[in-house]
Image 1 (cartoon, rainbow, N blue to C red):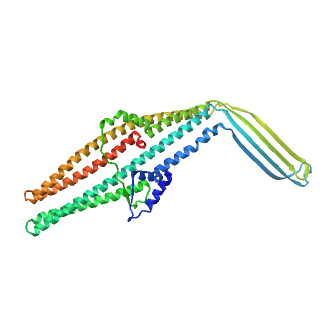
Image 2: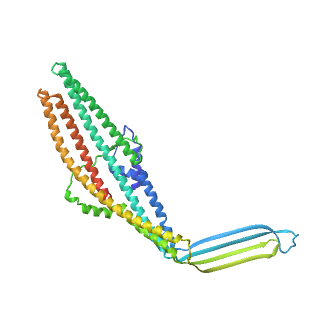
Length: 435
């Protein structure tokens, strides 16, 4: 049902035209990405490949191998019952055999392969889940960028409206002789600058939309409307303890868990390499049947049936140093895997620390930006009143308007920075799928 809903969502989105805009949520965007994103598809295919090897290395390893061969031959040859100058006969031969083989002892290599197969399956699942979590964050970031660009576009539109209204007032006052022409020209320059800023804001929105479409696997020209995110700005520093967050990362981070499983897999590979030092014992059973005859001479008919069972012992004596080289290589791979665990453990610590710092900084920026917007708005109101009363200059009014616009933009930026930092914290601790 989940896959069907995703497919219906994708089909609906593709059928959306510029006149029929479809609003999607962040959950729908992530669901589409999970079906279309090439990184997710590659991780899923790799997992399926690993899973396909589990059955042969677990159940299959405990079963005997059985094979069958069959042969037919036809030859023209001189019969032994005729002289050398006599006629030739056509000889026909038929044979088949069934062979079964079962490994009784191979230095415990078989059991090591069984354990390694299950370990590799778990590691591949962690890798697949981590790829999905990372892509989800990328989708979330692209989604946030679209919402942020849309808000910044609204600010740019409002700023241009204020500039154009101010220009109209100045032109009217100049026409009545109550305003010097230089102020009109200054405001025209400001209007032009605000139009350029508006064009950049509109381009940023279109670019962020195309980026989101590409990331989730849709046509870049698809016109999507995004549902708003939860921008509730709640942050309690006491709830975000570094030690607890770090422990959560080690418990839930799929890349760390996968690295631990790779160490287990490397240990099993080392065991398999060492098993080559030990003898192997196989049990085997064979049944074979063969016959051949000369059609014109029934006395030339021959038949052979044979059944055979037994044990086969192979003792390694000298392998040209290949066994010791294999053991050393496996041991070095194990040490590399252990080093990788330590490296990812440090990466978890760094990611958690950065995420916590980003959240705290973003939250503080939101509060500061909120106060700056209030102050800048009041400053703009006062500057506009002073200018209208002749007690201030146009430059003061333009500067106050620019400060207000910048304060609004900073507030929007800080809000969405906090929203994104919160999601980055979930990825850093490996708990994004638990929210």
